[in-house]
Length: 288
Image (cartoon, rainbow, N blue to C red; front, side):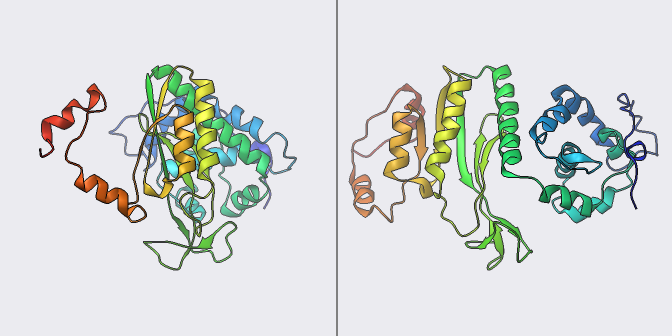
């Protein structure tokens, strides 16, 4: 059944006053806190620019679908089918400015029409929001964490998935995206989408280079440091970090460098790198 726009959209309401003794509150009444945040960020208008080149006739539109998915994740849901749990919730409708929420098939069709250009523009928008926040904090140092994460799916034909290392669900198809996270704020600066059968370092060098370049251009003068596990240890990545002037903590895979492990074990005297390591000597002193 099709509905006209006047039956879908509603006026934007002011932020209501929450009365905790009011028994009419729904399970998602806490979403009222996100209403002013979304308005302040002008997120709907900025998302509209990301999808402006897509000529579709859907009533809800891609910006509204994206806002719905953002609230979907905030509420703790991960599957599209979980939308049925709050399909008639008045607070979700209020925050989005809707009288009716799209059903699962509508959301699925909208996502299927998204192209690579729209994805790149949404990624750029996320980076802009993160950088905007970092500028307000005026931090002297930023720590970037690079790490992959396995995301499983039960769909056998899900695009971009593959069977690879999956500790929780062996043999399941999965994605293996690489995340760049700002340690000071917990925000995700960028994501590199990959199938589940690739190594941690697959595409990592260029991804790290782009993240560093974005932050150097947006935040000149801010000291950058990176943290990575042993999967990223290579001459190319170490050289990249050195040439970019980035301080880094990088685990060494000793199984690949047995001689280096032996040299460290046999080392008797150690030198302090700088004053910041003085606490190290307080708790540990090498044998003479």
